[in-house]
Image (cartoon, rainbow, N blue to C red; front, side):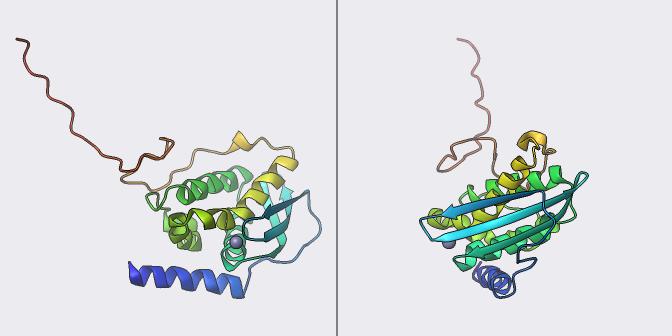
Length: 183
Ligand code: ZN
């Protein structure tokens, strides 16, 4: 796990040092601003939509490395995707962040976004990693698209049922109780 943690930190640092798709661009269909007062992170995000597709996500962000790296990863992941899929990706990412390390993402789908798994262990940083995604969802809503338009999306989740909320401390799968014969 130590090696993996180091790799994840490296991915986050790489995105922080060279943010993908950063800067505010024209044209755009909706703009959203999000603030994370607990850390001082701020983002202004612009969304451009063409038909059903995310044409562009551009942004200006200040704040910690996690918030900026997460926004960089998010923009790279959703640009060119159908809006419904972008929302579904955000659903999965949110489930992972709230999963306290029990919910993992499919690397084939999420790419560098899996690096934020470690953040899920630190509730104080979850908002940092969520900020850019929150701005994306806000911008989609401002485009007049219902947030529930997302297609169902599978998060790789071998051991944990994400539909259960709040998350139990230790989910246990007990074998069914064998009924004794009536006396
Ligand atoms: Zn932060």
